[in-house]
Image 1 (cartoon, rainbow, N blue to C red):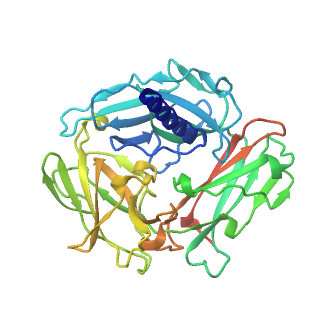
Image 2 (cartoon, one colour):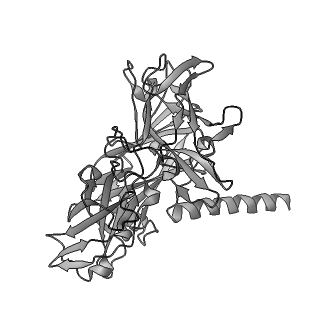
Image 3 (tube, rainbow, N blue to C red):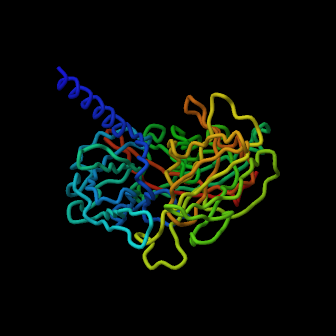
Length: 418
């Protein structure tokens, strides 16, 4: 009976994991997986790759025991629901293979193993179709460790993007509105209300994307979208940042550095900005970049440092909510380690994150117990904020079984107009 009970529990947990990946939901990273990146520049944070383009994904395991990891790919519709394609219909070659390309860190206080998966490779030759994908990383016990979303694109449509201020006077100072068009010289859009879909992303935040927007006007083969509330985002504020390229001395926004088992970097105390006037300073819209001052190979020589955050909320935090440090360093996930706790002696909220040397953007977000999030509670929502917007256009022919990602467009609120 005990063996049967353990078997049922194991099956139930495995079913939960499979269900999460099937429905396009990310599994929260474990605390020993760090610095998951695709090989895109910080300014191009969304992992978008052309059909047939070579790309790589890297990550660190700070246990540093050369664990075996395996990868699998899944294909999804435009709104991250599982597509109807079988694996041999979207994947050339095979997956569920071990990641052989890994190296151990050296000259670092924190040992870690650095893994890199490149596609195409000797087992996985590439992808046959465009669309949304997820990569799932498993350990040798076949437990799902973590996942990441990415997109494979075609170049069969032009997507125009313009950033406007909100039309509603109640939100004109707090929101940014997206107008767009989709046009194609190679595809004749038939029944576009049913066959064409768009997804709108603010910076690299996949969780705040807008879906299910239909064209308002059709001029020939050109689809026009000129909504107000339906395509509006809260403007937010510029991300905060710090840099610790040299862990032996203070860098940007770092007050002081100490040495214990690892290096500890203490940031200057951040203050809530919701009631302050907007001030521009350049950021990379929530992203991060691993960089050091004098190492030859940052992949295995960059040090991991304990980064100590301190935050003066300037207002009472609701009883049914918590403060989280958020950024693309973990794809804006809500992890236990980036949840802040109140230091009753100082009145400041504090948290410590283990991060690889580099330049990081971050913000403080209020997250309610029901999972809803208010990113402007502390930072405010300023219409002047610089944000990068990306629009993905998908097309499914009548009778087809999956959504093709036929075009990509982008716009920046630096060029915002009324």
